[in-house]
Amino acid sequence: MSSVPDTTIPAPFKPAVAPGKAGVAIYRHRLATRIGHWINVLCLTVLLMSGAQIFNAHPRLYWGQYGANADPAVLAMAAVEGPNGAAVGVTQVGPWTFRTTGVFGLSKERGQITERGFPAWLTLPSYQDLATGRHWHFFFAWLLVVNGLVYLIHTVLSGHLKRDLLPRKDELRPRHLGQDIWDHLRLRQPVGEAATRYNTLQKISYLAVIFVLLPLMLLTGLTLSPGMDAVLPVLLDVFGGRQSARTLHFITANLIVLFVVVHLAEVLISGPWNEVRSMITGWYVARTGKAGGETPS
Image 1 (spheres, rainbow, N blue to C red):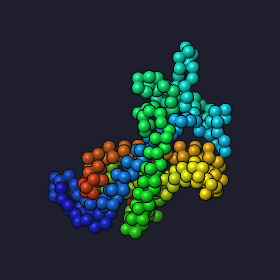
Image 2 (tube, helix red, strand yellow):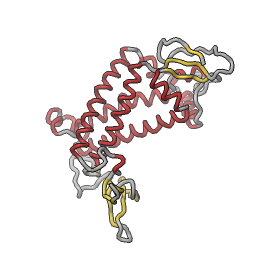
Image 3 (tube, one colour):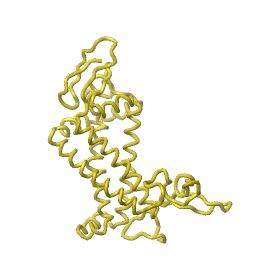
Image 4 (cartoon, one colour):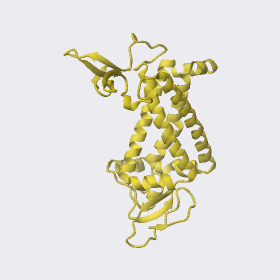
C-alpha cells in the first residue's frame, strides 16, 4: 500500500502503484469532519432513543391543530384485546392496522408484558420516564445544533461544500444518475479514481440531510415548545398546528433513521474496516482497477 500527500478532500488519486498491492492510501477526512461525524453519531443515537421515550407518553400522531384520544390518528401504537381475549400489540397507519406484538404497542419490560409504543430496549431511559427523556432529548438536540453549525461554517469556509458535496452539472444528467442508481442496485463499488470522491447519490443524500431533514427536524421540534410558540407563533402557522408539527417531526426522524440504515449498509458492503478506519484516522485505501460507478458525460 502506497501513500499520497494530504492535499484536498477528496485527495487526488495517484494511479501508479506497485503491482500486487491492494490500493493506494488517501487522506479522505480531515480532523474537523471526523470529530463532527462522531458527535453526530452520539447525538442522533440519544435523540432517537429519548424521542421514542417521549413518543411513548402518548403513542399517537395527529394532523391539524388538535389531538386527543377520541380524535382520528394518522399513526397509533396500542394494545387491544385479541380474539382469544389475550392482549395484542397493534400499529395503525392511516386506514391500515398491523399486529406488532413484542415490538410496537405491546412488549416485555423487566419480564412483564407491558403496553407501550416503542419497546424498552429502544428508549432512553428504558423504563417509562417522560421527564428524564425530555432532559436527554433537549440537551443533545442543542448539542447537535451547535455541532451542525460548526460543521456547516467549516464546510463553507474550507470549500468542502462547493468542491465535494455540490453535484456538477454532468452528474445531474439522467444518464449519469441512472448509471449511479444501477451501480448501487448491483452493489457495485467504485474503484480507482472514482473511489476518492463522493458519488452523485451520496452528494444528493448528504445535501438533503444537511439542508432539508435536519433543519426541518429542528423547526418542528421548536414548534412543539409552548415557550417558543409564544416567541415565534408563525411556526404554528407554517406547520399547521402543534400536532401536525409533531407528526412531521416523527416522519423526519424516521427519514434520518432510513438514511443511517442505508449509510451503514454501504459501509458493510464497501468494507467496514476501511470505512471506519478512514473516519477515525482520516486515511482510506482506494482499490485500483477499472473505475465503477462513473458514466462518461
